[in-house]
Image 1: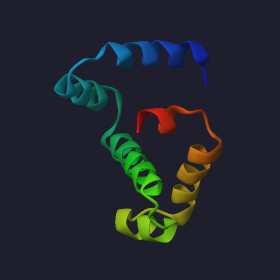
Image 2: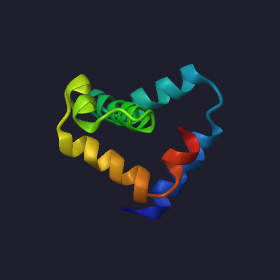
Image 3: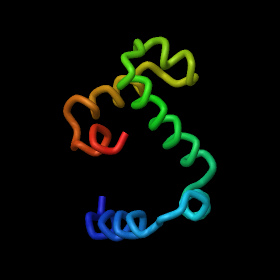
Length: 86
C-alpha cells in the first residue's frame, strides 16, 4: 500500500462536506462491487458495536463469518477509526 496515495485520498475525503458529493465521489472512484463491499463492512461494524452476534450478522448481510470476524478484529485491535467515527 502506498502511504502517499492513502494520505492523498484521505485529504480529499476530508474536504467533502456534503452527502451527495460524497456518494458521487465514491461511485466515481469505486466499482459497484467495491462500494457494496465497503458499505457492508460499515454495517458489520455498526451491528457489532450494538452487540449483535457474529453469526446473525453474517446471515443478515449474507457475508462469510470470516468477514464479520475481520470487522470484529478491527474494532478490538485496529486503529481507532471505527471506534471514533461510527
